[in-house]
Length: 416
Image 1 (cartoon, rainbow, N blue to C red):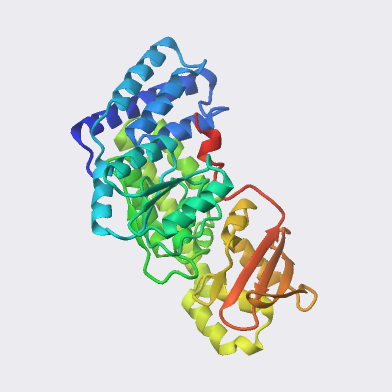
Image 2 (cartoon, helix red, strand yellow):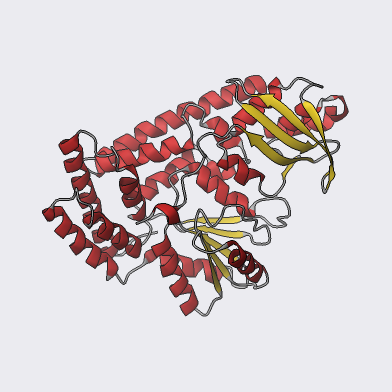
């Protein structure tokens, strides 16, 4: 997407301003991120979302006690410019998507409420039914909106990150990432809302990224380095094994963007991060050749060939991340909530001791099921309820010691 000249000028001016405020705060107290991490992350990520989102964050920044009078005045001037912006290149791109998929249900994700409000007004002006679906809407109302979206061909569902928790949308197949989350697991989670059991069509994904902006670099890393849109569910955790977790990429992107002296400096930092991602992918592929941990085609073939001779944990381990594994509704949301990486599930399954690890769990919608109780290589307790008497294997429930969630806290709770 190419920004209009006014949008480009606003992006460049806000970028320079935010970096200047960050540098002064960093120099003044020895660490700008100390105690203000979310402020900087929100500012950085909203700069590519929409002008109303930029305006909201600049207004909030101007109210901070630690912002000096000069910066406060500049923030308000920029906020006024952003609030009055009339050019929205991403809305024009969204128009193209809606024209292309007329009569089909379209799901649009954005992290930021001001952007969702902007999109809602624009889509309604086209005469298209639109259903906002975010954390500020109660559970009963959400269920009603989901039913109306399902029953209204040609409509649009607007969802935030928190609104998407537990959302199953296999009856839709067009997804728009209005801006790209800087955490690849959040992108994977979005795709999983549509690309799940019951989906009868290929999922079409549109990733909006403005040329020569921070999200242009992020798309490059996600698409060209991680190859995120080609992975199967659960594979991302494995190929990013060199990093603490996927949110580390978000932190690194934010820090690099804020600290950069200019765009050339930022590009150098992104290239350094890309080299680390390349190395992590290389290590994962080498591990694949040794253990087959992320070779879904090979695992699926072996599972079909040796199914009757395999233990239940072995069946689940080979099925995980392949076409022979189905996920019950809510499983992925719970896995993200307790911070359980796919690599930890694989580790626990490899460590499972049969028959001591198995407990009958009764017969339900997926047939006879059992609990598998085991521990990961670092001692974390993991329990999986599975139906593995026939193919496809179904993962029904996950449980384990709760650690840091794999995704950030909802934007509705934390936004200014």
